[in-house]
Image 1 (cartoon, rainbow, N blue to C red):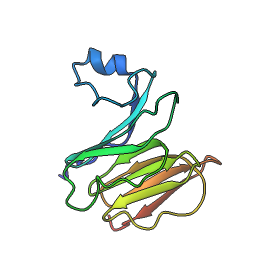
Image 2: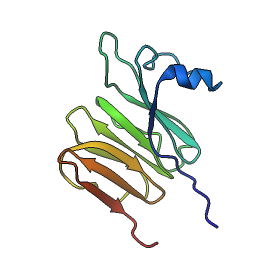
Image 3: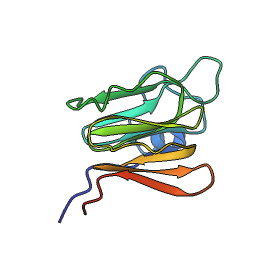
Image 4: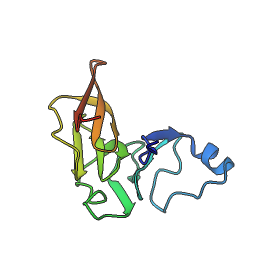
Length: 139
């Protein structure tokens, strides 16, 4: 049976994370908000870094294994991030999806409200409520 290696993005209140004994986010991340975008993939993790005086959005910061560039996030302001197997994706403040790393396919044009990076594919929720997926389709 194939094991699930990539976790989808999650948004949880930081108080809930602390209650579960989870380690705190590195300094500079959104610790004063009700929720934060953090995602763990295959040996790497990404999160949205806080910006002084701004309540949401920020730079994506990733750490961990970076053999395929999955931690080399592009510059810009992002509101949601998802770490996959050997790639990561994020939704920018202007509602576009950007992905980096390897094996993620071609991101379709259009506006998105959410993205989830998988093993060799990704899916996004479009602003109109539709869902679109891209990448490998061989399973």
